[in-house]
Length: 82
Image (cartoon, rainbow, N blue to C red):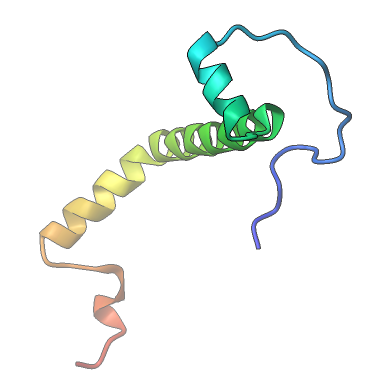
């Protein structure tokens, strides 16, 4: 299970947002909890940003590994028996 990357017990904080009035009306028509929807989407966006940062931080190693694989050699070549 993935450990949370933010404090899930942190208190809620009120804020003001400006959103398209038609979207707001439709969300209310479907009883969408705006706070919950925003939090869920922010989590998704933050996780994607963390993934992007990880990929960028490991770009050289990933490229080196991919080059080695394309050359027909992988890390386990000396270990496998087939």
